[in-house]
Length: 444
Image (cartoon, rainbow, N blue to C red; front, side, top):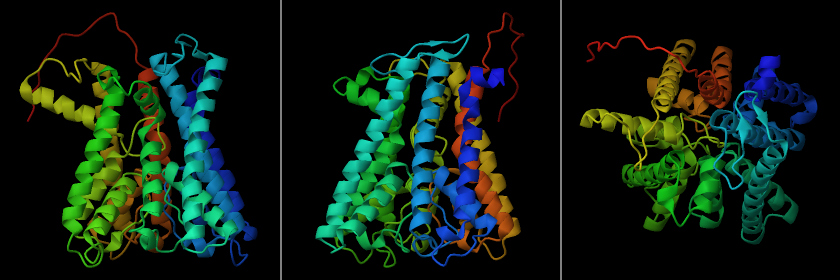
């Protein structure tokens, strides 16, 4: 217990598990469902895990199965899951790097892992304030649009605004519409605020705070911030262009839209596909070329120390720089005139390979326990669960009990696994006073 308390980040998985179990118990109550019936354990556990892990996958029709109390519980669990991962990530940054690149340069004593209580409180208050401010802005825009344009009563419009703002910023995918946000795919006042909220929430506050503070000198950003910001731009712009071309003439998605509508729907879907989980276009009717694109974007995910899942943008692009340096025969991996530590390269490789293995095993498991499922459907659903995205091709609602529990485990691992693994590797790094003789085995 003393070892756990020395490194509080190791308690994060237990905190998430406690929230999931509490949410499961509350969602099993008859008072949480529209027909006042007991919810099966598998359904309640899956929904609670999906909410706490800010995924958004559902085995039920969310707006019709759950009543007001159940939907409020889902909203609270999503907010707790989003803020929980941010506070945990802040502690990881403090414990690993001894300081977080913010204005007050939070200092940590590495030997005892004792945090400056005042500084940590200031940091977490700033994070919470930013979250609430962004969610309040999205709520105001969405509420006003539903009230003034779609004639929603003010109370209902406010509830819909709050619910979707919390889901968007925390990169959850639950929605109060059975068909997702398809009805608003060409409404910029509805889709763009939610899309930009998901993007900001998926950047991660270490990168976001430094980018805002040093916006005039991007050359002075830390490597992690550069990889996250510019990598996110590349993924969003590149993914948007590819999806737009693939779906331009697809009559089941955006083929019948006018050019501005196609551009808007494609951009918002890509922005929300990385970890947001909302359906802006009909994901089940996509062209075959679009599925590998979305699977790749979901697997990469968002920024480190964010509400997003996946292996993280910085991990993906760091490995890209490693490959580029190896192809060029460079002795060092450099990003923006800074040499990347070998420990960071090994950590990125470890996270990526373990994630690939988990997705592969999960895909095989879903295929084995489900009859009549196509391989790409299993891969899409497993990647969505592991990356805590929430997009679905319709497989989740017809999974047998073993498949439901498998996706539940993947959502939990996808949320706490990379964070815990990254911190464990970094905290366990030790200095040796000797090195063995070097040898080069044959590769390839």
